[in-house]
Structures are given as structure tokens and as C-alpha cells.
Amino acid sequence: MKRNLFWLAIALLAAAVYCGLIVTVGEQYLRADLSLGLPVGARTLIALLGGLVALVLLIVADDFRNLSRPKALAVAGALFLMVGSYFGLFVAPPEQFMGDIQRIMYVHVPTAWFALVALTLAFASAVVYLFGGDYDWDARMEASIEVGVVLAFLLCCQGSIWAKPTWGVWWDWDPRLTTTAVLLFAFLGILALRKFVDDPYRRAMWSAVATIIAYVDVPIVYFSVKWWNSLHQQQSNPNTVSKPFWIPLRASAFGILLLMTAFIMLRARVAALRLKHELAPPPLTGAEIGESV
Amino acid sequence: MNGVVSGGWNFVVAAYAVTALVLLIYGVTVITRLRDEISRASEER
Image (tube, rainbow over all chains, first blue to last red; front, side, top):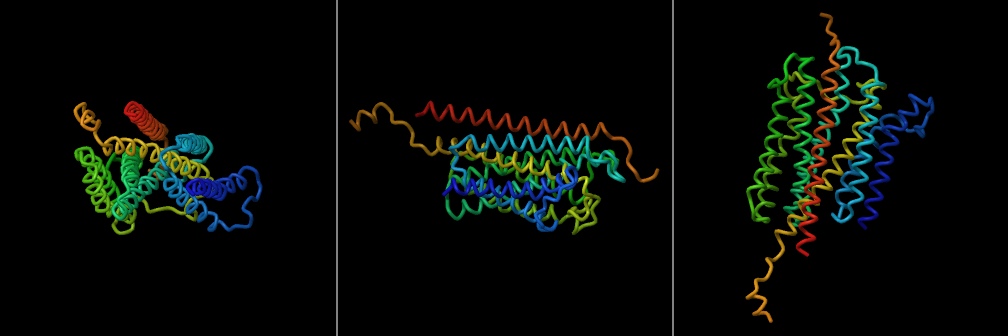
């Protein structure tokens, strides 16, 4: 069953990469129509949903045994990110108003997307753990939170580097930046909580509840640019992004998606092995061995 | 002042370098921790 889910995820990923990237490469560099008659909206939807559903299936299908799967995903992710960075740095033209600075967006935007996706996965894992009590989901929750925090930290660094030449400051207490900082520190706090609680049951229960509470900030981060008068620009979509920018953005997005998935799968193994050690009965003492004989 | 940002390649390089560095360092720490846990688990067996 889990093996079938894994191959279904790979098929969905392949469809997402085809619709999101290969068709655009065909249009722009091979002068070939590879769209199979699908309109751009449908292709974008397949790329988006295919990638996200594949991520969920890969996490669900992972039984923490096979190491070659996350390793292969990490290698593929690094390759996509390298291709995206090459196109972003050397092939895509400078943007009309932001010039070359806009090239930062090719890594900043996917980092933002997948920081929120990783924390959404942590939220889902917390809910599943609370309903089922399966420690595998506790391990997945810990892994997703840690990867989400790393991506949120990276997001803030990239954002600051972009803000200095465009806004003139490294940081501004604007609604988007403030809610992102709150998100980063809230989930950092949950990781700290997990570090200080030794009892696996209490640790899993408390951090699952804390994750659900902290997750309230994720939609606030996403909608902050719409709800308040923010210095940060609003979300873009295929209609507002010029076609020459699609390849670097999408290649980097697939790269960070695959790297994030690989990191979560590997980090969940660390948490699961530690849990196994904690939940194992203590070894028998010499006297106990004598009594049992 | 024409509303267009000019130059700034140093910022672009810094952003890509930070991205590569953070992802690389995190990947290495995860693999190191995984190796430690696997060797501890095999010692306990």
C-alpha cells in the first residue's frame, strides 16, 4: 500500500514538473508546444496541486526505513535549485523597476511558500497525533516544525537582503514582516518546549496543542498584505509574472519543495529513532536477571 | 531619481549565498544527527 502511494506521489510530481516547467521550457527555448492542449490555468493548477499532494503522499508513505528515497529527493531538489539559480542569475532579464535585485525573488518567494507549507504539515501532523496517538506523527510534527523554522529564518534573511536596496532599511515593522517574525519565534518556542520536556507523552501532547495554537498565525501571515496597508507587495500569480521569469521561479520552487520533503523525511527518522530509544523498556539489572531465572 | 533600482548585484549574490549556506548547513546537521541515532540504535541492539 505504502509502496503504491510512493509511486503515485512520484507520478504526481512528474506531472507537476511537466505542466509547471517542461511546457514553459518547450515554449521559450524549443519553440515547441508541449501543452497537450491544456490551458495555462489548468497547467498551473496541476503543477500546484500535483506538487502539494505528492508532498503529502511522500510523507504519509514514509515508514522511516528506506533511506534511499529522501536521499534521491534531496539530490533532485539540489539539481532543480541549481537550474533555477542558473536561470535566475544568468538567463532571466532584469525586472523593469527593481532591476537585478528582483533576482532575489526566485529564491525568496519559494522559500516563503514552503516555510508556510512545512508549518501546515506540522499542524496536520499535530491534529493526526491528537486524534490517533501514533508517535510516528509526533516525529513528523517535530521534523516539519524544525524545517519550517529553518525556512522561515532563511526567508527573513533573504527578505532583509532584498529590503535594504529597495526599501532603504534592513527591517521594517510592517504587518507581513512582523507576523512572519512572530511565526518564527512561536515555532522556535515549540522546539524549545520539546527540548525541555523529557516525558514523550507530555512532550507530544503539549507540543501538538501549541502547534495548533501557533498555526493561527500562518493564515495571518498569508493575508497580512491584503488585510493591512503593508509595505510588502501582494502575492503574485501567473497573470502578474512575466513569462521569462517563470522558469527560474518554478525550477527553484520544485527544488525547495523536494529539499524540504527530503529534510522532513530525514529529520522525522531522527525523531522516531530517539522516541524508540525513550519508549524502550530499561535494560534489566543483574539482580532482575537472577530473579527471572 | 527615476524609481528604478540600479546595481545591487552584491545583494543578489549575498541572498543566493545565504540560501545555499543555510540549506547546506541544515542538511549536514540532519545527516549527522541521523547517523548518531542510527549508531546508537545499533549499539543498543
